[in-house]
Length: 154
Ligand SMILES: [Fe+2]
Ligand SMILES: [Fe+2]
Image (tube, rainbow, N blue to C red):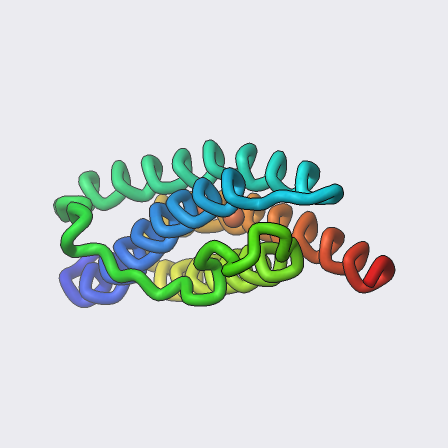
């Protein structure tokens, strides 16, 4: 891999890494904050995903290291998940499900960009991105299902 390829792939890996860690923070807060009759299914899903998103972050950090880049510390991590901040009202399940869906869709777009950037130049990073993309699509399907349910019941 030449320096030109590095220049595209490392920022995308870093962006994905930041997103995974921000998702962990917001899923954690929302999983604890939500209340209400139907909240349990959503909070359980969020709690399960925390572990999975953290494992994505770890794999991305390892890949950054393999490419000669230091995984950034907290002060250098971008933050932009406005839709996934904990709800003003702790019973606002829809807010959390819609926020999670936005986060999963954003992650999917980042991994698709990473897969494209790796095409023909970095099969190892591409393979990692494909593997994580499959997990994110699974998460998206789960939250889409929750949203359908909320649409029926409300
Ligand atoms: Fe993830
Ligand atoms: Fe995810």
